[in-house]
Length: 558
Image (cartoon, rainbow, N blue to C red; front, top):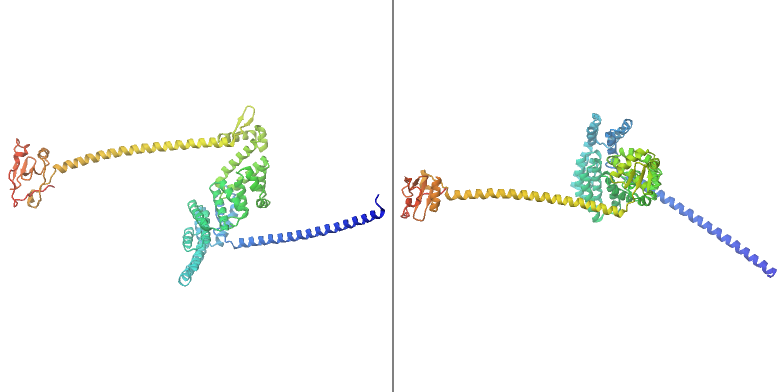
């Protein structure tokens, strides 16, 4: 047994240790609470500072040209847009035109919309534009006379920005190109090209957009900074949506969400909307990792509940809710300037993806069950599946007798192999067709060359024969002619029979001139008639004596 005194002492020590531990624990917890409060304070302060900084950056950014104006123009041109809402949109458009002094654009949009021009407003805008442009011209002249290259460049940039603001497309692009030539830094050159891209996006000039994107990539490779690289992703992703490249758009816009600074192009809310729309066509795993679990996108989805329901309905397999959200999204896309040309294709692909997502979990399903899952009738589901099966988007079979859809689980590698074989066969057929066309064209060219060569050979032979036997006589001025040409007796005989020879010389001592059945004496210049019996005997007509030096040949061939 433990003595009583020892037990009391142990109890006192235990009590002392307990009090000490409680004190140390309470003090530690207080210190941790203070640290957490301090950390929370600094976090809130930093977030508020970042928010203020972003707001100041947005305020500093000049939206020029304003792409919302192009959206207003699109809505006013749309035949299915609500007429009551068109009145509000028209008021916004006229307010923007008046605010930005857009005289050139007002004239342009009036012709497109077919609305009468307000002459008073047009005169006021024209006067304002003229005064501002004269001021910019004076600033440019003053800078060229008394200031440096940077001041001249700034003066030209101000003029180009104003021309872009008022909607003078050609003049603004020309002024920006002139400013670009005078700009030294790569960053400032990229900013100028971004401005040209925005002008091209405003009027949707695809050729100019592609050209400027190539120039930007070259400048980025030379030394573009981090901010402009991220801005380029936003620009390219935005344009990829306009040309229906949803895969590229999703990749670029997802990268731009975290570091978005291109407020002169679109708002951050619009960027998130475009990102979700493009990413929905991608892989389910990527959709979960990059969209559903993205903190930046989740934060914005609380202010866009329709978009949030659209995303989560497909991800959580609520197919009836997904169809309802897809119908609302279709209406929104129809009246969006960028997505309007592609909303039918997009909705069709999203329906195919939803069907494939449901069918991939089962070996077979009834049409009634699928209709109930999507909130449609079995007849509509049968029609939809028939369309997507025939187009190759779904790999399944429909048993109309039993009302069952049987799925075929296809390996992705087999699909890729079949696609490779199919595309390779198409490529080989095209190559063979091209080679046949080339060979047929080559044969035709060879035939044409052969015909031409035959004609050329015939013409050359005729020319050679004529040059051998055809001569010119000038009996009125024989003294002015030069020397004669030597020909053979056979040629003389042939030419005489053809009545085409005029002059001939058999050898160095004997020469004569003949015209049909007549011949001319080269010494006396007298014309003799050839007897019919001796017409084809040129040797009887030849002279046997050589002419003297004073008796020069006075006959020349033509």
